[in-house]
Length: 391
Image 1 (tube, helix red, strand yellow):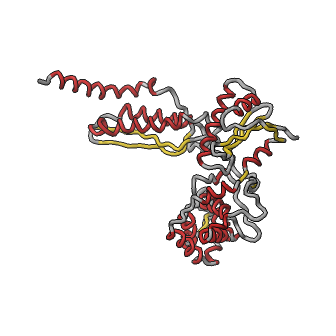
Image 2: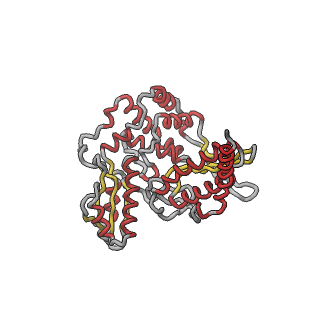
Image 3: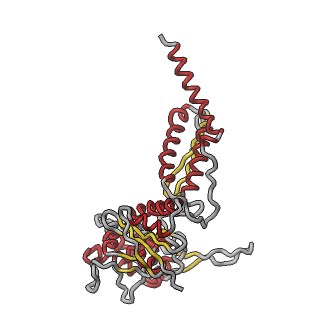
């Protein structure tokens, strides 16, 4: 059954498409453009927040689109046959996207590019035929998880790819499909960079991606394409039958591809999230303790971490000279700066990775936070006493 939808195209001041706001009869949603720049992706978070704010005002889904279409960057309301049609737009890749991605490679680091060439030239068929370890049943009855056994030469080759800068925030590999290897084995250098980023980073969460790419010839095709581009940057030009002014659709998303997001919370898996660091300090006469929690956090979990660590610092962070004069105040200031990023986020979507932290009551309503008044009053008493006893 076809469910028609309506949508608006949202663009940045420089003309780059940020994403799409779309609605049906029941709801309105935001859809990021997968190949957009990091700045456009951050701007998309703001538009996501605007949609939620408009819905909280009681506007209908179409009313939200009409409102957003009148804001700077919002396009006219258009019709689409279904949500899949808007998703196809979100997977669009333009020549400008390719050029921006390739600009992240460090052409000036000749040593890194030479290392890439040397590392891949040194690979043998034995290196590419990756063996696996583990997989055996332990005496306890548990099965040892299998893992690939990469040779030192293969590890060197993969490190060389990372060394030229294939992994960059400008490409959100988890929200994009893996480029396919053409039958002739010739990859566009931007696609080679995308594939390399997905393989290098993907190996950390899914053992065997490097092994599969090495055995299929994908890894060598990536290196060959990037080395050719380094020798002649003109290889990133469109094919003769491509119109640079026309957006080229990317490979259709695979069913197993995760739903894209600018970042996901390390605690609950919800999005959007901001990369922040919160700290706590404890000072006990001659002993001091430091603690920090860093990583992407959604608004809810981030606020909970901020309140917990800041309250801890306010309570026990003052009881040594250095803590009183330096470390405790510095910790509080740094937390205040970090929490501003979290508070700018819209409310997070569903968190698939676990329970979401409860922020609890604000710090001003936590009795432990007022322990900080003791050293503050003590310092004031010392100042007043000193002034009173002066000449």
